[in-house]
Length: 366
Image (cartoon, rainbow, N blue to C red):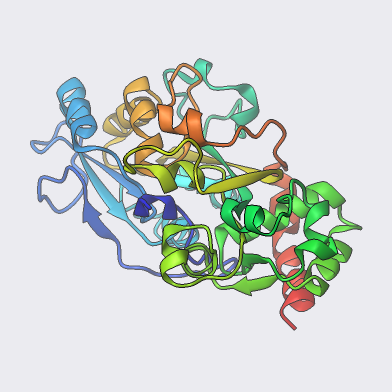
């Protein structure tokens, strides 16, 4: 599996201010910081999570088009990177931040780390993805779905239909089959909890989790352990002798499992229970106080361009926000089409996230 599928899948310290050391990579020219638009190095600095990836040729194309070189500073998982951007907002470490998603967006906006900028090409992004429409503090760049994945071979061998919905997961026939991530330490885990809140409401989600716990759900710290160690359907899980045929992962996990496999199978080894999904959208924003605001604006425009958007799926295993961008065949052939994922307004997530995490921890981990 391509390791970039790990995007934002490590620990997300909800409410904890982690301080990772930022690592520089990408199209750096070796200079020590962001260049101004008039500076000799013409550098624009992108701050992101560890799973940001773009092909070298695409970054070179940006340089050819604009004259700016891109320096990428990676600051841990999504939660850590957002927290670091908040802590350093008086002296931002770059010009653009990429990778805050809708589960964490309110934290970034409430702390005022972004300067408004209406990106070129925003008219090609569906309105429903524009969580900050009208104020333009952030720009939607990609979207994806957190969903339960299943091991096709297991269910075929046991002559059992795989689950298709959240309701199915609490049925006796799926007892002890599911592994998920800790809501307090994992972005996919948090998204899966939000899917249950969206489905069953403020008054029903805790009862659902009681039933899920009684049905033998296993909870591990993060996605890497869940998917590549405990899940029997992934390449990593097979090597680790994982015995859970159900896992909380991404709708884009099945394409990643067949990428580079020759000959290509008629069907991937894993599938997606499309009735269990929660939609995530990732955003980019111009950091307030950035040294190179013009370069930052040019970079945000480029992130939304078809050139970058069509490179992104096989780099970060997400779908383009730009509706004109085409998906690679491996996505259309092996990926799941999620027509009605769970969603929730960022304002509601902001208001309730911490108390939901505490309630979940008390209920499920005790």
